[in-house]
Every structure is written in C-alpha cells, then in structure tokens.
Picture 1 (tube, rainbow, N blue to C red):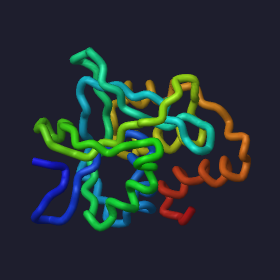
Picture 2 (cartoon, one colour):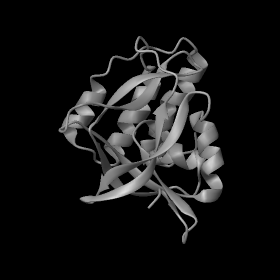
Picture 3 (cartoon, rainbow, N blue to C red):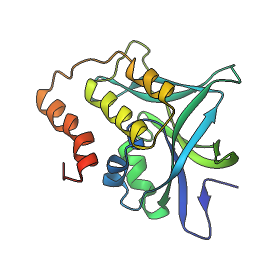
Picture 4 (cartoon, rainbow, N blue to C red):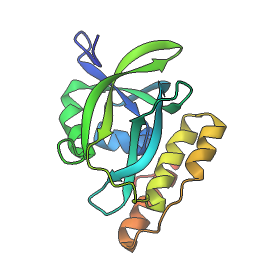
Length: 180
C-alpha cells in the first residue's frame, strides 16, 4: 500500500512542521483535509533543514531509539495538488518526499513524509516559523509535553522585518479566519 490512493485520487501526507497548521497547508493545497494526529516512531524532529531564507526548517531524522516519536497531522490531499506541495516544500532542492509508515488511530498507515536533503546542524529557525509549527501543534491538540519541547526550541529573529511581520501574523489569521 502506498501513500497514494488509486480509488480516491488522493494521497496522505504526514505534516510535522509548519504544514501542521491547517491554514498554511490549505494555502498550498486547498483540498487538504486533516484526518487527525499521527505518530512517526523511531524518529526525532530537527530544525536543521537549510532554507533559502538562511534559517532552519523542520526535518525528521531516524534514530536508534524505539521510544522516540514525532507527532504530526495526517492530511489527505488531491493527487492534482502534489506538484504544488512538492514545489512549496522544495523537492529536489532541499527536501525529498518518501513513503513511510506512521501510526494513525493505533493502526499503521502509509503516508508521504518530507525529508531534508540540505541540512546544516548550526541553523536555527526564525521565531515566526517556530510560531507556525507550535500553532499547528496546538490546533491539532498534540501532546502537551511535545508542544513544550517545540516551544523550548531556540529561535532567531528574522532580519527581514517585512517577512517576519507577514509570517508572524499567519497563526493568528488562521485561528480567527481572517485572510493573511
């Protein structure tokens, strides 16, 4: 079984970074429907994906620890929007999409998972990006201790104040239904 469904013409995506926030992923893929929270066992979240803006974005890294888990949101998206999501994620220039197994409602399920190909462990996320990730985690009621770990991530202020101001407003706009 793959992450892509032949009968429904959709695919499943495990979102663990800023795409957890429903409004963010729907700007990229209007058909995105949140199915619920999911778990990626044997992985940890890192903020080391090199972004074109000079900051670190989220990545999942497999580790040798059976109790490690990354929480995220499982979305179902129209196959016709895969190219738009791949472009937004930077497939071929920073991420690659792989099929992987997540646990959804206690059951294994295949989903597309974006993995960083351009990493720099010295990078930190910008505060607005961290806010998007945390807002998505809170929106979908991820475990409180996991949200606390996300909040504990050291973040930097974006030197591009216009980009910072625009992106900082996104979580508030998504919660209130206002356009961003």
